[in-house]
Image (cartoon, rainbow, N blue to C red; front, side):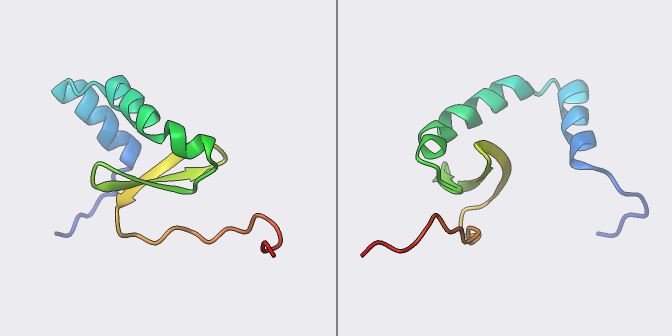
Length: 80
């Protein structure tokens, strides 16, 4: 499907919230609960409910298909 105008994710979310009454804060709270343990354990990707939550600096910054590879991160020298 080709569109001549761009629409941001923020605009889509606000449209769903205002036009369809989608409760964004309930969804935000659910994501936070699902991510809590993974964030505490410094995970960068948390697979839950069929999706992967992408975490950066202790915040969920994206939600992707569960099979999307996580970014490689280093946390110091390998253990002996």
